[in-house]
Length: 390
Image (tube, rainbow, N blue to C red; front, side, top):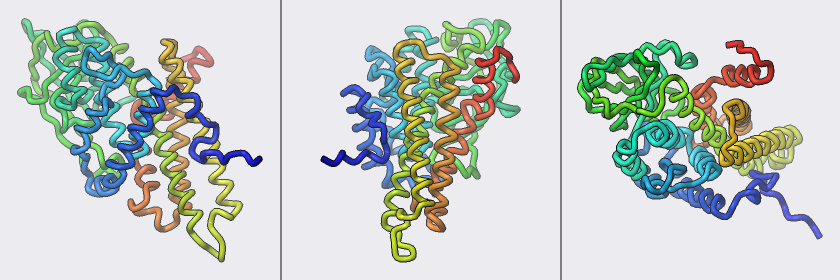
């Protein structure tokens, strides 16, 4: 009896390792991406437009702040389910996953983890419903890999704080109603919830991007922005606050590029089966099969890395170095596959009628943000040697 053919996008049947609930989450988000995202995302990328019309359905599916408890209007899912959400959204486009990552891991998470109960009840249900969009102000114009060298500062003035500074490369900046802004204070780095309509707050959209075109990226400027002490996140001080948020976001980013790589592999599998050159399908060439096999190997490795990382996260034992290893590996895997797929598609691969060039360009940002590849290599090197080489 012949063995059943394997799923070319899941050679190790990683899906069988998921719970029924996790599979349901993946299937639900996958259908949304197939039906609502893929028909419009190429045009949105061409037009440099974030498809805001998708936000209500993203919210209604429970994808915003998915791991936060239900008492705050969220879905209360586990970490693996959140990873699968990221994987399926990025199978659509990195910009869509970036939107959900920032809302969930970089704005809702710090309010939940570091905020007061009043802040949680005020913001989290509305953010889960997509009624309030947030952005995360950490990276500054002079550089993102050294957040300890932060120039933005906040000074106490009676019962208020006055914030001055600038933030750069801020996803959702011009969409957001609130910004979680990190600033130096006399008592260390602290986080503040800043409504974007506050006097002195300006968001300026960044144009001329060749990556993440279906995403809003902004610069933020804070000129004597005054917020009450009630807007300060009271339960964290120091760099561990923003770095804790980044660990949450990077975790999701380890899953997202798997979806982008799967989209590219699926596209070239279909293309090479149908493309006839010299009287036979392109897929019958050894050179093509070797490339396809290598893509499947690397995707499988990434799937297993992220799934184990998710199990560690849900067990409460996940370490930042483990996240760095998976972010480094999986982003490198995906960008290499997207570029290779673009090459296999030939001249047709340079248009956004195919997904490979769009994914390849997006992944130029994904491999850079939330810690560059070099930074994550050095994090792993530090863990191995005990020596900080930054």
